[in-house]
Amino acid sequence: MKIPSENYQFSNEPSILVVTGIREALIYYAREGEVDRLSEIMAEKPEDPGKPGVFITGGKNMIHHGASLEDKQRKIRDKAIKNFLSELKKDLKEIPDIDKIKSLYLFTPEPFEGSVLEEIPAKLKKKIENTFYGNYTNKHPIDLVKKITTVKNKKKEDLTEEEAREILKLKRQNRAK
Image (cartoon, rainbow, N blue to C red; front, top):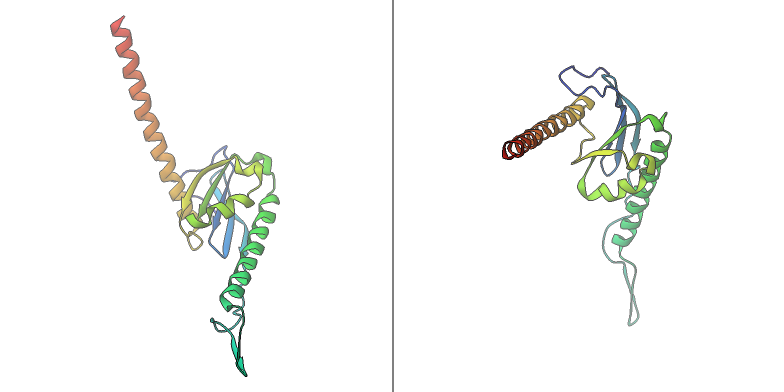
């Protein structure tokens, strides 16, 4: 899909956009004014093991307690997330021309960031340019590019101010001589 010209174009900077939620992930490839979806991962919804609570049976002067269903629910949920993350890792490893990628932009809920970072291959992990916190899985890829554009423009403004300070500092030093 074509990136509108007022946005960052990823010219000479092929990039990967990794967008995750807790149960969904999208991987986009952006380069030379285009952004395309490479992969979409949906975690299976964990089965509901039954009503929450404690299982209690009684008999003649005896009461037996069973394990809480919350533990079972947690194990099922954790297994679904683990499967989802391993699928994400597999898809990230299969990115074509991975060595040509210059930057990776991560869009993920903040509490999930650590889990996602563990699954990003080392080659890509060192190329992370920015992390955007929140659930962006329902956002259009152009909206993601707009966020990147905003950050890039802000960095350019900051750099310009920094350069201006440096120039003033050099002028002051030259005057003092």
